[in-house]
Length: 96
Length: 309
Ligand SMILES: [Fe+2]
Ligand SMILES: [Fe+2]
Image (cartoon, rainbow over all chains, first blue to last red; front, top):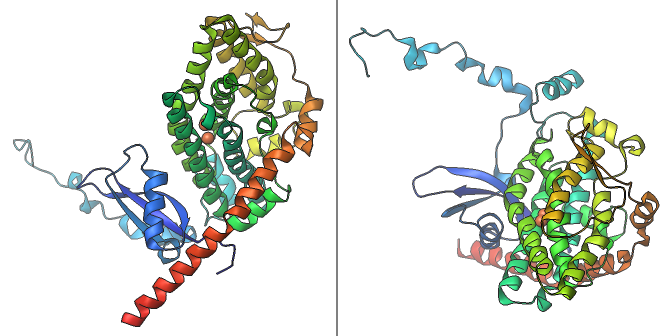
């Protein structure tokens, strides 16, 4: 690491309330996990934005690439039977 | 690829870091986002000047919280700029060597406590106007940073206006102080929106690529329309003899700021350019040992952890 480095990049995820999913909220620099967590608290939760945090080294994230949006997600397009609205019910049944 | 980029812009979809983008779009954004980031952290200096002299504990807590927010804004924007393939170290290097610019407004001194009011009310007010627009900018990470920033900014303008209101309702000397701050900050604030549309070299591309959705002059007009009644309400006078309501355009007519002064300040000759940059470089140098210690500590812990395995 460069002597005047600002540390590696970390991604920050916040959980708003217990039980809710963690949502990506931004990133920051830190030299280790502990510092990343403390910085994340100071930068992203100063106004009660959450009650729990994840920090993940950005380099560890594996992402789909925008070029293959089409072929990568296409298999889901023609499978309407995965949705409840595909099925016909007797009209007497109001809720199912 | 180019067609893809244009199509995304046409559909008002965000361009994301891994998307293909024209080099000139990337360069424009690096310049704009880093300039914005630098402005946030340089902007901490004129206000920081008054933290130790805030007139009450309440005022001091508020000012510290605001200055801390600005540091956070700098961080959001630096990481947005970094997603365009430039390192944080490079960005800071550009600031410290004077290669990169920051908002000219922060090269003016904060002489009295009323200036802290004027900065929150006018400077943050103008910044918010620009940032509200930028929430819909075409580059995803920049747009998302703006959404967070706008949420945090809302108290900045109010606290500044509150300070100004209090002074305007105070003793004769206090009211004069508020008026004097308005007199000094009014024109530099109008300059914050950038040169007039006819003379702005970067504007055309920025609008074409949906980086900006409104022009410098449109935003400046909106700011004047919004601010004049706020000044009148508390008995302060906008220092512009030509200021007049224009019923036809449903807005105020107002004088042009002194663009010669603007260019002078941009090119390093404002009242505080040297002081601001000097303070920033000194802070960076003084922090060097902290960064070195943090690296050494992280290394040591990594080695220890490896030894236990
Ligand atoms: Fe800010
Ligand atoms: Fe602010």
